[in-house]
Amino acid sequence: MTRILHLDASARPGRAGIDPHGSVTRLLTRRVVDRWQAGRPGTHVTYRDVGATPPAPVSGAWIAAAFAPEADHAPWMDDVLAESDQLIEEVRAADVLVLGVPLYNFSMPSAFKAWIDNIIRVGRTVIVNPDTPEEPYTPLLADRPVILVVSRGGFGMNEGGPLAHMNHLEASVRTALGFIGLTSVHEVAVEYQELGGDLLAASLRDAETRLDELVMSLQSRAPARAPAPPHSLSA
Image 1 (tube, helix red, strand yellow):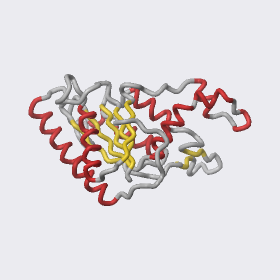
Image 2 (tube, one colour; image 1 turned 30 degrees about the horizontal axis):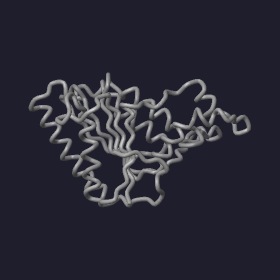
Image 3 (cartoon, one colour; image 1 turned 90 degrees about the horizontal axis):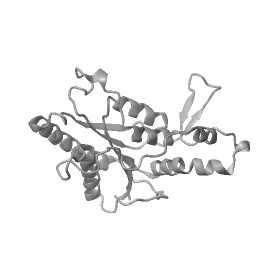
Image 4 (spheres, helix red, strand yellow; image 1 turned 135 degrees about the vertical axis):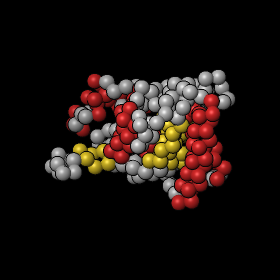
């Protein structure tokens, strides 16, 4: 059985074309999950809506708890890190991650950044190696496919595009996930959301086609893993 972690980070609560002012990324991540379930009946989906319910941002107490030596660990630290522990376990349990992340002001939404900050933990998802400065970090998570669905209001921000220098989203996501071991990131973006019309429609159709092909390709070569996730929310 395949296990998917389906995460939406858009502040828009609905889906484009279905709900007023709906989200393009929510529309497309739902399409990916539906296509996956159609190809693999019985797929287990854990849904995390950080756009509606953002994780708590990193605080002084979080830092103190996350970096405390084992000998100094106090009971209150378990409470501070409980949400981070759950988010990490959701990632660990997933065979595939489907992430819907719109471009907000040249980078990721703050809610998604809070999720990233909670899943990067020294000793849990990455190890620091001070004695080996040539390789100071060791990721602790096994690699697995990540489908990163992006929407942009503007255009020309793909790699090699005239405005690519203004896009700091995909590269930062790749860096953060790769830091903990998730390097197989597949990116599909929709542009022209602010302009709308035929340009947006064409970009959306292209993204749908690419995502459908990506699902078929990944299913043909990605076996499901055995462990069951400890936390499950209905998608």
